[in-house]
Image 1 (cartoon, one colour):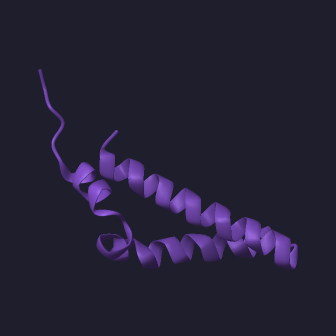
Image 2 (cartoon, rainbow, N blue to C red; image 1 turned 90 degrees about the vertical axis):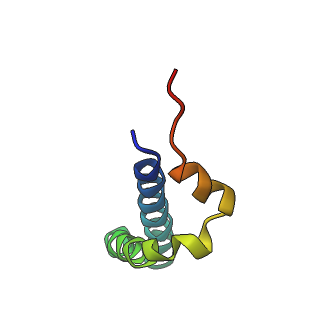
Length: 67
């Protein structure tokens, strides 16, 4: 799998799960939290250059070595 796709998958799963659990804990309504988490992840995916560590950013875009 492509490295950018792996990071994107973890980004969306992480935010969706985190806000879903927070919503379930606070309001006993995980469905709304899942939608809000996915929306938050979608809106913040463009902020990767400012949020992600530089090392991870370089790892995502370097080409794998072929032997």
